[in-house]
Length: 531
Image (tube, rainbow, N blue to C red; front, side, top):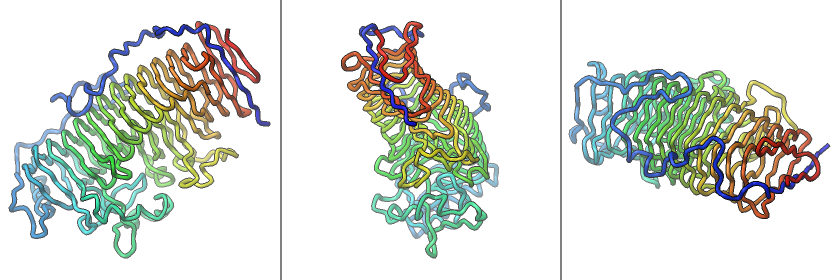
């Protein structure tokens, strides 16, 4: 039986003057664009006591007072630094470490491998342009591509199992020219979990581009299995894939970086993959895909590894362009938990807060807190995209009939977003959930919003509260489908006709409440009018 109900709420008693929200949130404290990002990074790292969970004591790595400065003598006959700089890094690491300094100039290189106790320091005016030739990323190394372990190119700057490493300075890490053949190589034949069987031993998952094998493009900076990692001050330009992607790392500090990859497909800014204790601050990202992204492995392979991303603090950052300001997923198999983002600005991204997974991705996304955020000029402020599209997910993208719950069924729950200003957006929010495990316990509170559409759809949620908000919209429609325990608590709507048109469908829809001044209006079948 398909229950279809419409609830038309007259809002004539809700004052249409500028309200004072119940908790008296100081919206003047929410930062503007010029108050966040790489341009305003302070020299010192401030304490991290504000995190609502226990983090490890992150400290800036220190390096011995040894220094080797790269010179023109280190350029090989091919015009690249690769052999010399990797030898220098290796020898300096054996001596106990120090700094390898790249001075002002335009340098070319293939893959650079960092070793323990090495700081790769780029002086202002230094540009390292990385090759677009697959030969410069051989032999294949242990890495992770979109949540699946492989043997592949790794990264422009790579490390495996190193301790105390850094990439610092005011220089530029630059990918190959935009017409480089590497950019046109197919990213596999299908989604990666179909191309790389999870039953295959990792050592045999060779993706080096030779003899007809797949070549997955390298990230810009991607250490794996490393501890005490610092990335500071560097600019990343025209990557060929993701930019900064620590994998299986612990104690990671990323601060004051700038990413420019707007025209790069899959040009993510910062992707944290199955890492623990991470600080990201004062960074400015303009990306061809998601900006700040949290991941933890994909499908059966991610469950096998079973390493979460946990204890992540993001503060004073600017997402200046991209698909999502901050995105959890879509690789979620190991779990994503204990994430705190505050005092950031999302400008001109497609979405602001994005939760993304798929039915075969597994894991739990939970204990997420975002606050003090300004959202400017985007398509949608809050997005739960948990099913995907038939183009990539086939039958798994169909909502109905509900599927059996398996270890690969993901869970998204316990999310709070508060103290925010949405200056302009086409849609406030949409939830496309998973019917067998609805997203649960979501609180969005203390906000001022200007939008066209309020709720495009709210599918398959259980426990979803909007509280202490003013919403100015050009469209008065709200669609709720098979969701329960949805509460609008002290929300003032500025909509056409001062009436809210709630379209409620689905036999599981129940517990839809409009609460104002302690009075509850329960939306049921038929028409309910608040007078």
